[in-house]
Length: 343
Image 1 (cartoon, rainbow, N blue to C red):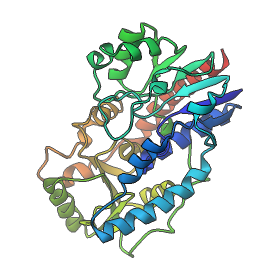
Image 2 (spheres, rainbow, N blue to C red):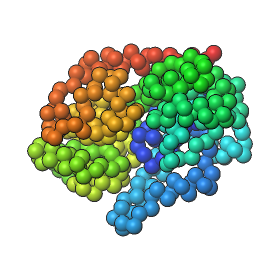
Image 3 (cartoon, helix red, strand yellow):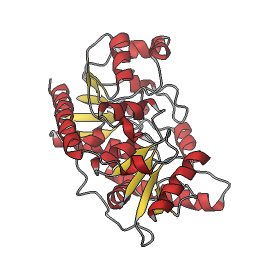
Image 4 (cartoon, rainbow, N blue to C red):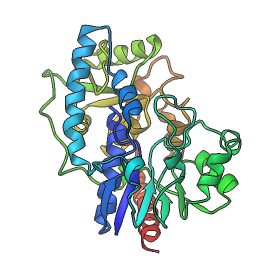
């Protein structure tokens, strides 16, 4: 079966890349031919490149290295050569997701009608772990075009409760709760385990777009207490000891080798869990992060309410019990994906 994926694969973001890569690998593992549907146009490409511009020469140099790193990584994604708006190629099935493809409040990317099932040349349109993030039922309900488009979708799943409830209320069809695709595969073959590790001391990996002054102080105080460096991959946080314009697979190697991980992102939390790290997050105010932590019984990893984060960072995590839960949910998720592509 020829399967097309509609997702946010081209952001300069390790989490966005790895969710796309993991879904591609999962669908290929089920025996299908798969490619990413190319929705790019001049406007979206320019908007994406503008995010790399900076008045700081040091940050601009970092972003140039980052661009090269991601340009290399995209070669591992099977992306359609031509824009879908021109070809409207037929696929036996189209998978929408994962990531925030239904977050109409996210202004960092264009809201494409195809993400909601509009104008897709396929009789089988399924969703896999899309997220509406902070978008509400009312936001969707008031957009007649989106409501009508969602009715073209034949099989629904979601990665969080908010999106699940929007599906049931708007599309009026049953949905399955599934894991983010990054949980579905292992990365042993792809992971780069240390080429880009700077320095000689142990380190805390910091994965964030940007921390405020309070979060920076808490993180630096903890690093000083433990005698560890701070390494920031993918994003230019020059308050850390080292910034690394890593590829997504180098990012995984850096997580594996870290003593601790401090993050405020959804995928930063996921990969901390997958690599069984001592971690903490400042991201519980984000719907998707708090939902993930709640689902896995890890809400106590939130750092934002503590003046001294050491007690949280050092609190042991029962990864044996957590692994059992993840395996159960992984089975549900892969079963949904397999059945949706087979029926």
